[in-house]
Every structure is written in C-alpha cells, then in structure tokens.
Image (cartoon, rainbow, N blue to C red; front, side, top):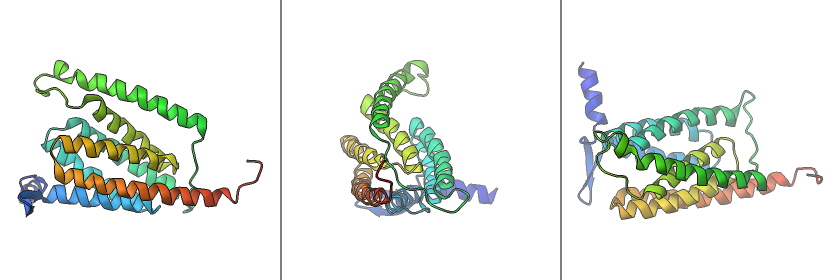
Length: 225
C-alpha cells in the first residue's frame, strides 16, 4: 500500500517539483511536457525512439487530463498510445528496415481534407451535446467548439499518417500547432502555449527535413512513375 500511495502522490498535479514565475510545475506535467517535446523532435529527425517515448508521453497526459477533467483529451491519449505501438511496428517492421517517406498524392489528399471537415463537424456536434447528455459530468459548455474539434481530428489523422511515414503528416501538425497556440493563448495557459510554439518550430523543421528526404527518394524512382 505504501508504494501505491507514493505513486498516487507522484502522479498528482499537486506534487510540484519547482516553481516557474509563480507557476507550480508538477512532476507529471514536467514529464509529460518534456517527453512530448522530445517525441516531436525525434519524429522530425526520423528516429525510431519517437514511438516508445510517445507511449510514455500518452501515459503521462492520460493521468494529467483525467485530473483536470478534460476527458476527451484523456481518451485521445488512449488513441495515441495505440498508434504509437502501431507506428513502432510500421517503422521497423520485421526486417528492421525503415519504410521510405512517401506522399499521399492528390486524390488521397482531397480525401483527407474531406475527413477533416466531416470529422471536425461530427466531433463538434458530439461535444456540443455532452452537457445535455451527461449534465452531471459536463457542467459547463465547451469553449471554442469546432476549433477544438479540428485540432483533435487533425491530430488523429496526422499521427496516423506519421506512423505510415506520409509526407503530409508534418503539414497537418503545423496547422494543429498554429490553432493550438491561439486557443491556449485565449484560454490563458501560457506554459502550454509556449510548448506549442516549440512544437510549431519542430513541425516546420520536420516538414522541411521529411520533404528533403522525400525528394531524395524520388531521384531513385523509375522515370515512368
């Protein structure tokens, strides 16, 4: 029981390890934030450790979002956990060789845009009605309804494309980070806002790095393709 109580103490947002400009930073938030930054940077560098660190990151944020009652973000971490395992397998496969970076192409990109539109409005509709369906659990209506839905849906699609090593994944992450920076700034959470500014810079770098490798791969393709 002592070990369980210690674990609960360390996972609590009340367990602050230091204070930054008057903001008490908990161990859980520190581990979640730093592992998230490392994960995104490694992904931009095309590194396999992206995925095990991503698994750790999703576990940290699952507990974090549960404690601050952001249940949709909490459930999103379950998806990130599974997709990180999937990405780990896809990137290495059984041969230990990396799959080349490829582009979706025009038709599939149009389909992705269609999914983003339908998914955003579908999730927005669902989230809008949560206070109606579960008034005891969701006391207040959601803020920035469809923008929040957009970042969630786009994150899911971008993460899936990242696992499949599709070039467009980083372009989607750029859009997600820009919207998140605005949202978190409006919600007055500066620490997370700064984190997403860093995410945006890494995503821009990842876009450039992956595009460069993609163009290199194109040189070795038959001219007929």
